[in-house]
Length: 595
Ligand code: F6R
Image (cartoon, rainbow, N blue to C red; front, side, top):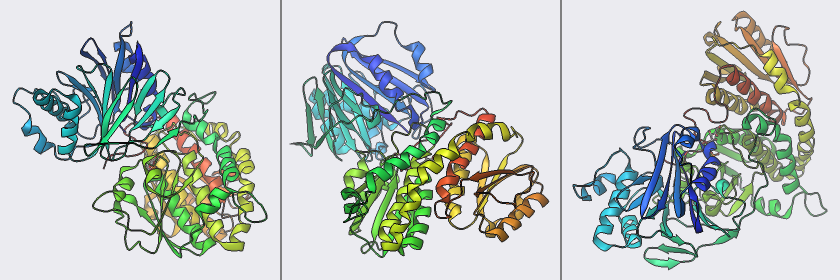
């Protein structure tokens, strides 16, 4: 998705280099064009490229311009095609801007522009920059032009704007799209993603919906509705997580290997057996309120994690839980229920829209499970349970998904009374089991899954509480390899779909032997050329021509956590055979931040 990274330096400095470094850190979000603009000698020096950062690099000047202000952007085309004209920054005579979000009343704004405004592209953002220019021609104040513009615009925006008349200042505005300001000794950074903030940043300021203002070399001034306001700040804690792949061939593979530590971190931060409680004070506080019914609301992989959460909440905690895809949710009769939002980024637009007019929260109790600290969602919901997955750089989610299902399991244990708490022991052994499973698995799979390039249909099969992980496994296959893949439970499998051009991936709880027989007999008779079967521990049922993957022996309740890394690695190996771009698959956004 689109990302903003802009910088205002206290002293003139090589702004373009700083912008490229910052943008580089958010490329994991997925993008199709990139651009930077440096304000130097009352002129916007705009450099843009269609494609990725590699296409931008050769266009950069050998000697970086020394300036105070620069704005940068990666674009994911939603409004207007992928083209140089539509790439950001977009500029008029005096203004240059970068924009995340969508202006919904552009048809009302565009006719207000004077006839001489030359629009080169097709985007709403370009109309906005010319609109600011038009307003400025009347009032000669960049700040009042922005103030008037945000009064008239509708939709969503995070904006960083440079004006040639204010070479030591950067304007900003935000509404329903994230924007954070970081202060460092060398200056101020405006970014849509906290992950792009340099380690030098000491303090973060969080503008709120409808805020606008400016940052100069000394201070941040924030306005809302024509009044100056003070917004909350918080210290910037750097994660110390390296932005490098280390010895791994991709961030995805690295993040799959980080999963045992993610579970360790979840346990360390939430479970603490003392006389008075099984949980740390913060987790105990998060689970203090238990409702008999719950709604779990999420998108994409996070939604599949919720499906598993629903199963555990019902089985372990006896809570009637229902899953909802956020775009389909309207606070349905939610007054007496706990509404739990599950999101890696905390910035997914379909979730955030539930907190704005005309919907507004209708639940008495809300909570969220979020990986990205300081996200917009974490500021909207009172009870926040962090996921402790660390920064996920691969666009396709792996360790964040595992952190979500593990935390949902823990929640079910916490609400399951004495009996529920007994299940926590199953989580305590999980990191070591994951270590054992993950070690060597990738090499084994890379050697044993043949490069079946003519296979164009992957079928995932399972039963009971394993369905959510095979839909997630199937999603990983689609995301990484662009292959059609489908997930079915045994009961609902349209058998005709298995044919010599399909590959079958079966996840079986070995205690369900009749099902196993049925599935494997099917696989044989229908001639799927390649069959992978994943079981929890050894099983004699698996015919020799199937590739049998055994997780360490484990209880069926935690089998989903152990089968998941296998499914992730299968998708990775197939994608590598097909030559796909693993960390930034084509047309895939990490979280969808526009509606
Ligand atoms: C899949 C993936 C997406 C996200 C979805 C929700 O690999 O990354 O499907 O799971 O966009 O995003 P969050 O969890 O950030 O709300």
